[in-house]
Image (cartoon, rainbow, N blue to C red; front, side, top):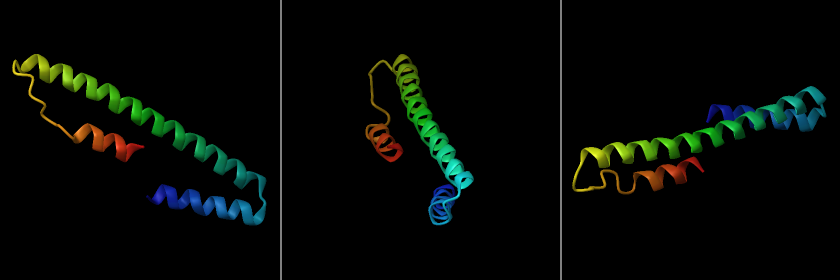
Amino acid sequence: MAFQIWVMGMSVIALMSESIPHLFAVLVTHVLATTWSGFQIYNTREFREDFQEKTLQADSCNANLLPSYWSQRGAAEV
């Protein structure tokens, strides 16, 4: 949350002062944040597949241990 507040502050300063370095810093920050978000979504998908594979191998009755966790986590990440 603090990161988003910092980015918002940088955006306001960049727009008000029309500063090229501030605009560049905001652009780089937004690109990094978007890249990190994409990585987290990908990592969650991979973790879910590994988790389900390992729990299904260990359990012969195919019980779903976390029925709504994955959909809630995906919605929170997006």
